[in-house]
Length: 319
Picture 1 (cartoon, helix red, strand yellow):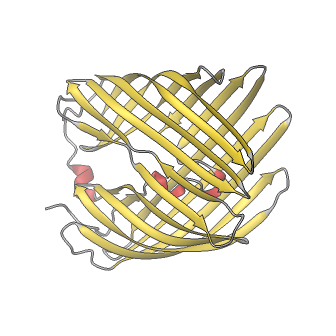
Picture 2 (picture 1 turned 30 degrees about the vertical axis):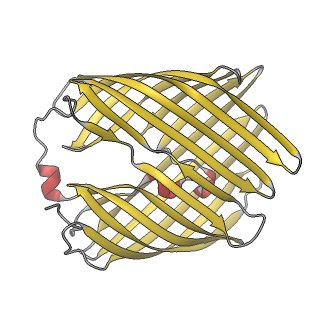
């Protein structure tokens, strides 16, 4: 039996909830230096989100997101904030908990115009525990920010850290043969109430399997399709990758990763269409910190090069 929602639990929502919101992607933190031909750009994204269960039924959670992009002499910066109250209808259930929630949000464009927009969001959904501390979350809701209103469907993996689960962390081997690793973001579909506002679909499943102790083989897929004011853009990547983990302490280790695969993009507007496809490869190194026996946080720098686009990315990611 998997533990249900409990008072005092710390809640970490699926990253997919935020994909496309506040003008940012779903990364917790990323710093990217992009170089294409003779031009370069710097992009920083920082997102923090979490909540706390005030009782078995009632949970509050919030998110803050900051992004800035600098291309040549032009800079854009924005800040997004959201606060939500969630009520669980059946927290005593074995592993499936239904909820409703309501919250407010603001989107501040810091540079260049300084515009401010305020709004609200309402949703209902289901948290289905697939293991202790880990739940598959499915939700549907409406968000209004300024004059922009949209409906959204999402699914992803949420984390619930109860006190007894935190205390149960012992010296285990999370990198043993036969272990699976999953990313927390899966899918989000957002569509507007009125024409010419943004519609987008994002898919980002990630999975890896330890074929031997400390050695994992995985596959990541990312697909983004958006339509804004008649301009449709599509982007996808498919990345098989290999990872090697070196355990330093009971709760921490290093990892080395390498991956390569195809990518494609397409932009359409009326009779105009431009598409591009090619091959990319990447390398990375980082640290893996165990929070519970089934949950870890990873952070580290990485390098990625897209051949046909002549584009190089050097970044720092947290996830």
